[in-house]
Image (cartoon, rainbow, N blue to C red; front, side, top):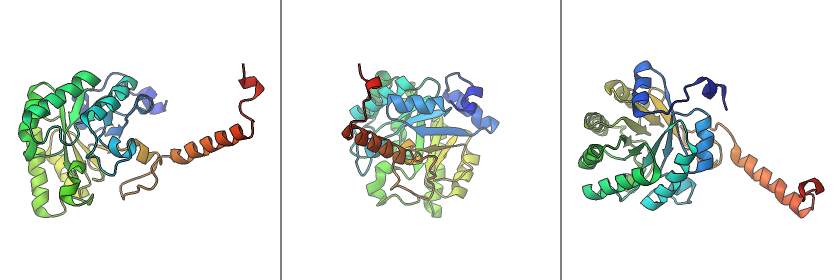
Length: 274
């Protein structure tokens, strides 16, 4: 465990604490996890928020987009993660197709995730087009984090994963959506892959926290996919990505060593045998 996490509070992180962090000017550290082991490890490192993202479709299931992942998949990934996390706030993505088209389906999906996983909050992509869904989920007593800018569930609409809100019209729409999400009662907003100046402007305009990914350093916090930042997916290197480790190389090298020792009959030794 890092010295930071040893010295930091061990109490369970809540949405109220995230708000207090913004108010105090303390940055919020968020990272993804999708299973018990990774949830336990990142929690021990002192992260404030663990996101069980629908990016599990990419890094855990091998899909090209997040679209194919199901609600049952997300619930399975979330159950293990929640069991591994003791301190951080666990937020779960509602996947594509389970909230966009129907208010009733959105509420049913949200309630299922909360009841079956033990997570603390949900994240939904979009602004005014899902206003009613967010209102009803919040009315059910479920905390919601918004997500604006590049919303990967809309990749086919956008035609790719490029930077969003570079023009004045889209930037104004994003700002209006951010204000709307705050007014509805969302506890935070993720800003993905938008110009840093716009992200700073949104962060200053909102009283709730903003969490950036590819949105510069002036947001209230940052989020990265854990496999990406640990170098387990080194073919993926957008401009905002920094490797904080090269665990992929370590894993491959360690397993190759194991394979060699099995084939050379140097493992197991007599001391490792009953």
